[in-house]
Image 1 (cartoon, rainbow, N blue to C red):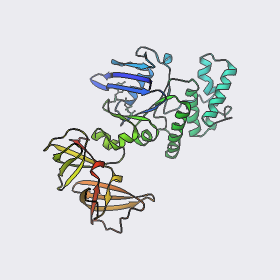
Image 2: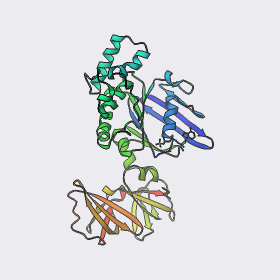
Image 3: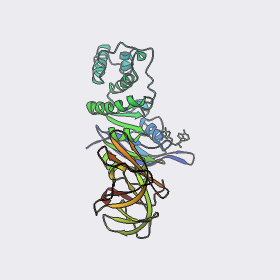
Image 4: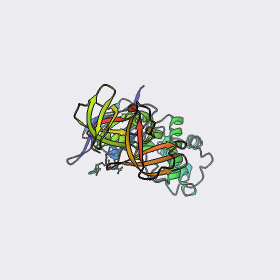
Length: 360
Ligand code: ATP
C-alpha cells in the first residue's frame, strides 16, 4: 500500500525539552491514523510539524514522496480542522465552504456545484444559505469538515475536533467521522487524548508518551497485545498485579505476587527468573467463582462492592493495597454476595500480559 505521509526520526526541541523525540510514522493512503496520548505528550507539536506551522530540528517529512520540511503550510496538500471550528460567523454555510475554492480562483459556477455536492456528502443538503449560528453544534462540525474536504487535500489533520462538543454529540460524531473518512477516502491524521475515540475511529493508532511513540498498531492489537505497561493502562481499563518472576517459557510467565499466591500470563518481552514484573489483566477477561477451570490463574480477593449498570456488573474487590475489578455481562451471576466476602477471580493465562518493571 502506498503512503500518503511518511516521517523519519522527527525531533522538535524547546530548550532542553524534546517535545517530539525521534518519531517515525508511515500512514497508508486512505487510512484513518490517530495519535493518542495524555496532555503534554507532544501531539500538537507533532501535528504542527506536519501542517508546516513549525519546523523539525531534525528528521524528514514526506507527503506522497515529496519532502515537505521547508514547504510552507499553504503550499502543502494538507488541511487542518481545529477544536474551535472558527467558521466565519458573518458568512453563509455555502460561502464558508466555498471560501478556500474562491481563494484558489475556482469559478463561481464550479464553486457552487462543489459546495452543493460536499454539503450532500456530509448530510446537510440544502443548508447552504443558513448562517453558522443557525446550525446545531454537530452540524457546524460537519460544515467545518466540509470546508476542508471540498479542497480535496491529500491529508486532513484533525486537532481534537470533538473536544468542544457535549458527550452525547461526541459519541454520535465519532461514528459519523469514521463513515465520512471512508466515504471521502481522504487520509485522516487525528490527535486525541480520548482512547475511546481513537479505538472506534482508527485503522491504526500511535500511542504517544513523552514525545515518543510507545506502540503503533490497529486498535484491536493495541487492546489485546499492549507493547508497554503505559499502553496497557492508558488504553482501556486494566488491573495490575506486581510480583517476581518464578518461571518462564515461550508463552507463559509465572509470577509470585507480592500479596502471595502464584499467577500466570503471556510475556510481552524476555523476562528472567527473579526479575520484578507486573501482570495486566482486563476486567472483562476475568471470571468470578469457586469452580474456575483448572487451567486458569486465580486469586482470592475481598469483595468491596457490586455495581450494576444494566448491561454489565462491575465487581470491585481488594487484594492487599490493590483495587481490582471484573466486568461481567448482565447474566454473569454474582449472587447476593456481601462486602468483605472472599471471591475468587480467575483468567486464562493467555489473556494476561506480563511486563518487566511497570512504572506507570
Ligand atoms: P494537550 O493534549 O494538552 O494539547 P499535547 O500532547 O498536544 O498536549 P504539546 O502541546 O505538543 O502537547 O506540548 C508538548 C510539550 O512541549 C509540553 O511539555 C509543552 O509544555 C511543550 N511546548 C509546546 N510548545 C512549546 C513552546 N512553543 N515553547 C516551549 N515549550 C513548548
